[in-house]
Image 1 (cartoon, rainbow, N blue to C red):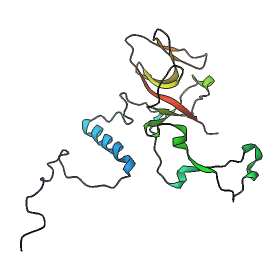
Image 2: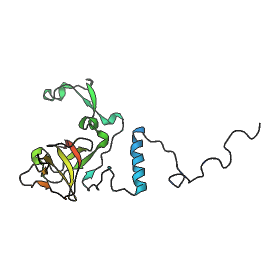
Image 3: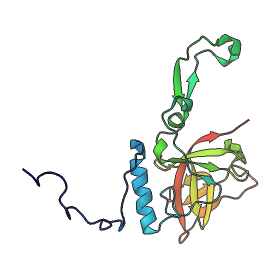
Image 4: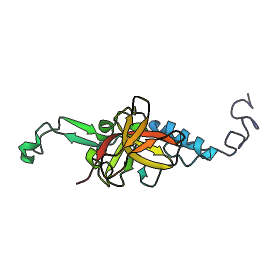
Length: 203
Protein backbone atom coordinates (compact mmCIF):
# COMPACT_ATOMS: atom_id res chain seq x y z
CA UNK A 1 0.00 0.00 0.00
CA UNK A 2 1.40 3.36 -1.02
CA UNK A 3 1.68 6.28 1.30
CA UNK A 4 2.41 4.31 4.48
CA UNK A 5 5.62 4.53 6.49
CA UNK A 6 8.18 7.33 6.73
CA UNK A 7 7.86 10.76 8.31
CA UNK A 8 4.62 12.63 7.60
CA UNK A 9 4.99 16.23 6.36
CA UNK A 10 4.55 18.71 9.22
CA UNK A 11 4.81 16.03 11.87
CA UNK A 12 6.91 16.57 14.98
CA UNK A 13 7.96 19.72 16.82
CA UNK A 14 8.73 22.74 14.59
CA UNK A 15 12.45 23.55 14.36
CA UNK A 16 13.48 26.08 17.01
CA UNK A 17 10.38 25.65 19.16
CA UNK A 18 12.16 23.76 21.95
CA UNK A 19 13.36 25.21 25.27
CA UNK A 20 16.53 26.56 23.65
CA UNK A 21 14.68 28.49 20.94
CA UNK A 22 16.97 27.24 18.19
CA UNK A 23 17.88 23.99 16.40
CA UNK A 24 19.88 21.50 18.50
CA UNK A 25 22.60 19.04 17.56
CA UNK A 26 23.51 15.67 19.06
CA UNK A 27 27.10 15.53 20.35
CA UNK A 28 28.95 12.51 21.73
CA UNK A 29 30.55 13.18 25.13
CA UNK A 30 31.90 10.90 27.89
CA UNK A 31 29.05 9.68 30.08
CA UNK A 32 30.75 11.03 33.23
CA UNK A 33 30.65 14.56 31.78
CA UNK A 34 26.87 14.67 31.15
CA UNK A 35 25.94 16.10 34.61
CA UNK A 36 28.65 18.76 34.32
CA UNK A 37 27.61 19.80 30.82
CA UNK A 38 23.97 20.05 31.86
CA UNK A 39 24.98 22.32 34.74
CA UNK A 40 27.17 24.47 32.46
CA UNK A 41 24.33 24.91 29.96
CA UNK A 42 21.92 25.86 32.75
CA UNK A 43 24.34 28.45 34.18
CA UNK A 44 25.08 29.84 30.71
CA UNK A 45 21.38 30.30 29.97
CA UNK A 46 20.78 31.96 33.33
CA UNK A 47 23.76 34.28 32.91
CA UNK A 48 25.47 32.85 35.99
CA UNK A 49 28.89 32.48 34.38
CA UNK A 50 30.88 33.83 37.34
CA UNK A 51 30.73 30.54 39.22
CA UNK A 52 32.63 27.93 37.16
CA UNK A 53 32.92 25.66 40.20
CA UNK A 54 29.30 25.99 41.32
CA UNK A 55 30.23 28.42 44.10
CA UNK A 56 28.15 31.34 45.30
CA UNK A 57 31.09 33.74 45.03
CA UNK A 58 33.41 34.51 42.10
CA UNK A 59 36.74 32.70 42.28
CA UNK A 60 39.95 34.78 42.27
CA UNK A 61 42.69 34.50 39.67
CA UNK A 62 44.78 32.16 41.83
CA UNK A 63 42.10 29.46 41.84
CA UNK A 64 42.48 26.83 39.15
CA UNK A 65 39.54 24.63 38.08
CA UNK A 66 40.33 20.99 38.76
CA UNK A 67 40.47 19.09 35.46
CA UNK A 68 39.40 15.50 35.83
CA UNK A 69 41.59 13.21 33.73
CA UNK A 70 40.21 10.57 31.47
CA UNK A 71 40.58 6.85 31.96
CA UNK A 72 43.67 6.48 29.81
CA UNK A 73 46.73 4.64 31.15
CA UNK A 74 48.76 7.89 31.14
CA UNK A 75 46.78 9.04 34.20
CA UNK A 76 47.72 5.99 36.23
CA UNK A 77 51.08 5.91 38.01
CA UNK A 78 52.72 2.55 38.78
CA UNK A 79 53.23 1.74 42.48
CA UNK A 80 56.06 -0.61 43.48
CA UNK A 81 56.37 -2.43 46.79
CA UNK A 82 60.17 -2.04 46.87
CA UNK A 83 61.17 0.46 49.60
CA UNK A 84 62.70 3.72 48.43
CA UNK A 85 65.70 3.14 50.72
CA UNK A 86 66.68 0.15 48.59
CA UNK A 87 67.47 2.43 45.68
CA UNK A 88 66.14 2.42 42.15
CA UNK A 89 68.33 -0.55 41.23
CA UNK A 90 66.00 -2.68 43.38
CA UNK A 91 63.23 -1.96 40.88
CA UNK A 92 64.11 -3.53 37.57
CA UNK A 93 62.41 -2.71 34.31
CA UNK A 94 61.01 -6.25 34.30
CA UNK A 95 59.45 -5.96 37.76
CA UNK A 96 55.68 -5.49 37.45
CA UNK A 97 54.14 -2.82 39.70
CA UNK A 98 52.02 -4.05 42.57
CA UNK A 99 49.24 -1.75 41.39
CA UNK A 100 48.56 1.48 39.55
CA UNK A 101 47.32 4.57 41.32
CA UNK A 102 44.96 7.29 40.13
CA UNK A 103 46.37 10.22 42.11
CA UNK A 104 43.16 12.18 41.80
CA UNK A 105 41.15 9.55 43.65
CA UNK A 106 44.04 8.82 45.99
CA UNK A 107 44.26 12.44 47.19
CA UNK A 108 40.55 13.23 47.45
CA UNK A 109 37.51 11.34 48.72
CA UNK A 110 35.30 13.35 46.35
CA UNK A 111 37.34 13.96 43.15
CA UNK A 112 34.33 15.29 41.22
CA UNK A 113 33.82 18.10 43.75
CA UNK A 114 37.49 19.03 44.07
CA UNK A 115 39.59 21.73 42.49
CA UNK A 116 43.05 23.25 42.81
CA UNK A 117 44.05 26.50 44.51
CA UNK A 118 47.41 28.23 44.14
CA UNK A 119 48.78 29.47 47.47
CA UNK A 120 49.79 33.12 47.61
CA UNK A 121 51.77 34.19 50.68
CA UNK A 122 53.28 32.50 53.72
CA UNK A 123 50.50 32.70 56.31
CA UNK A 124 50.30 28.89 56.55
CA UNK A 125 53.97 27.89 56.46
CA UNK A 126 53.90 26.20 59.88
CA UNK A 127 51.19 23.88 58.54
CA UNK A 128 53.50 22.84 55.72
CA UNK A 129 51.81 25.07 53.14
CA UNK A 130 54.23 27.34 51.29
CA UNK A 131 53.87 30.17 48.82
CA UNK A 132 53.31 28.73 45.34
CA UNK A 133 52.03 25.34 46.52
CA UNK A 134 48.93 23.83 44.97
CA UNK A 135 46.15 22.85 47.35
CA UNK A 136 43.58 20.26 46.44
CA UNK A 137 40.35 21.38 48.08
CA UNK A 138 37.10 19.45 48.34
CA UNK A 139 33.66 21.09 48.53
CA UNK A 140 32.05 17.91 49.88
CA UNK A 141 34.60 17.28 52.65
CA UNK A 142 33.19 18.34 56.02
CA UNK A 143 34.78 21.54 57.37
CA UNK A 144 35.11 20.74 61.05
CA UNK A 145 37.02 22.45 63.85
CA UNK A 146 40.76 22.28 63.24
CA UNK A 147 40.58 21.63 59.49
CA UNK A 148 42.33 23.92 57.03
CA UNK A 149 39.77 25.52 54.73
CA UNK A 150 39.38 27.79 51.76
CA UNK A 151 37.01 30.49 52.99
CA UNK A 152 35.42 33.68 51.71
CA UNK A 153 35.53 36.39 54.39
CA UNK A 154 34.49 39.99 53.73
CA UNK A 155 35.11 39.92 49.98
CA UNK A 156 38.46 38.16 50.36
CA UNK A 157 39.38 34.56 49.66
CA UNK A 158 41.73 33.05 52.24
CA UNK A 159 43.23 29.74 53.32
CA UNK A 160 43.31 29.37 57.13
CA UNK A 161 42.74 26.84 59.91
CA UNK A 162 39.14 26.82 61.04
CA UNK A 163 38.68 27.35 64.79
CA UNK A 164 35.18 27.04 66.26
CA UNK A 165 35.00 28.02 69.95
CA UNK A 166 32.51 26.64 72.48
CA UNK A 167 30.46 29.84 72.12
CA UNK A 168 30.35 29.24 68.32
CA UNK A 169 32.77 32.09 67.60
CA UNK A 170 34.61 31.35 64.37
CA UNK A 171 38.25 32.31 63.89
CA UNK A 172 40.35 31.78 60.79
CA UNK A 173 43.78 31.11 62.27
CA UNK A 174 47.07 31.68 60.47
CA UNK A 175 49.94 29.22 60.88
CA UNK A 176 52.57 31.95 60.97
CA UNK A 177 53.10 34.33 63.93
CA UNK A 178 53.79 37.17 61.51
CA UNK A 179 50.17 37.05 60.30
CA UNK A 180 47.01 37.98 62.19
CA UNK A 181 44.08 35.67 62.80
CA UNK A 182 40.69 36.66 61.37
CA UNK A 183 37.73 36.62 63.73
CA UNK A 184 34.36 36.32 61.98
CA UNK A 185 32.13 38.97 63.53
CA UNK A 186 28.38 39.40 63.42
CA UNK A 187 27.41 41.00 60.12
CA UNK A 188 30.53 39.78 58.31
CA UNK A 189 30.25 38.10 54.95
CA UNK A 190 31.56 34.59 55.55
CA UNK A 191 31.41 31.22 53.81
CA UNK A 192 33.56 28.11 53.94
CA UNK A 193 34.08 27.22 50.29
CA UNK A 194 35.98 23.95 50.61
CA UNK A 195 38.23 21.92 52.87
CA UNK A 196 41.92 21.45 52.07
CA UNK A 197 42.65 17.74 51.59
CA UNK A 198 46.11 17.67 49.99
CA UNK A 199 49.17 19.81 49.34
CA UNK A 200 50.98 19.40 46.03
CA UNK A 201 54.53 20.73 45.70
CA UNK A 202 57.00 20.39 42.88
CA UNK A 203 60.68 20.09 43.85
